[in-house]
Amino acid sequence: MSRKRIVTLAVIVVLIVAAVVYFVVDPSSSRWMPRCIFLSLTGFKCPGCGSQRVIHALLHGDVALAAHYNAFLLGAIPVIGLYLINDYTPLRSRRLDHVLKHPATIATLVALMLAWWVLRNVYEL
Image 1 (cartoon, rainbow, N blue to C red):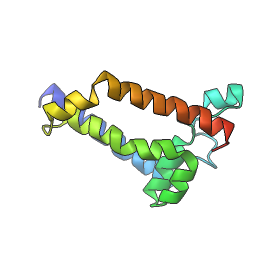
Image 2: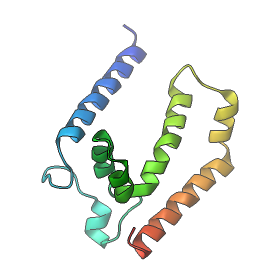
Image 3: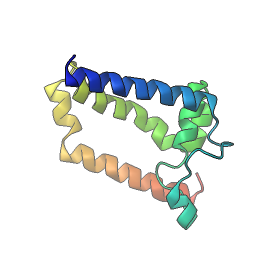
Image 4: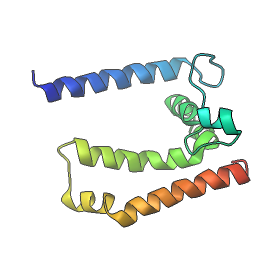
C-alpha cells in the first residue's frame, strides 16, 4: 500500500472518530472539550468561537442552532469544501483552482473573516 493511500485512510479514520465524538459529546456541557484560549484571555470571541458547537449541532441536523453558534463558519463550510475537493481529489479544475487561489479571492475571504470577528464582538453575534 502506498504512503499516500495510508495517509488518506488515516485522515478518514480520524475524521470518522472525531465525528462520532462530536455527535456523542456536547461541547457546551463537556468539561474536557477544549475552550477558546483567545476568549479566555480577552473576553472577546475569535472568528472560530463556537466551531465545536457548530459541528455538534450540524451532526444532529440543527442548522438554525449551528448558525446561532457561528454563522460565518456555517457559511464558510461550502467554501472550505471547495478548497478541499479542488486540492485533494481527482476533480481538480484549473479554472476553479485559479479562482480559489487568486489574491483577490484570498483577500476577500480574509476581509470577510475580519469583519465577522469585529461584528460578532461589537453586536454580540
